[in-house]
Length: 178
Image (cartoon, rainbow, N blue to C red; front, side, top):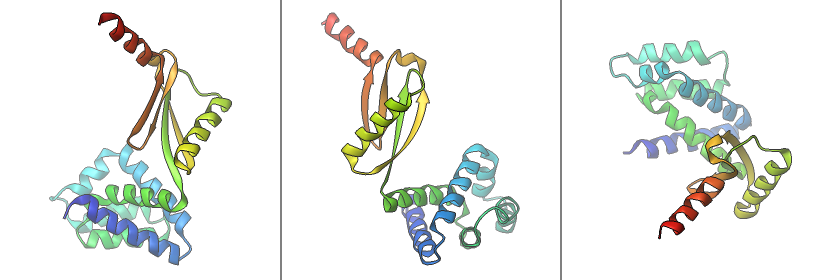
């Protein structure tokens, strides 16, 4: 069975358990913490994915890093997943949980890349654009790329709106060479 299917099943089970226990927000914050820690600490995921490191040692690593910092439900899931020898996909489970949470709460992630930091007015206009096209509340992440010269690039899932000056100049260049 593929990793994404297994991760999705664990994430859905965890989201249902968290809803039953009225701990959905706490578990969501824990999954964000785990994902952030895993992304910033390559050694953690290498240890969890290593077939050489024993499962008891992996559980000890998770215990020392997260037991005091996360909700008991989250730590219990970490323990269950490790005992089932699935700790190598914990990062995927966290990612699937975050996606499922956003779907449940009606939140749309979008990334905007601009040549300069966004003003509050432009941020609001972009959020309204995403809201009108998806009908969902927007969680906007912003990046600055001076090579765009001007304008912005907006990514919503697998869709992209390129309103950058760089792309317009490239289009003009193609028209002039033809």
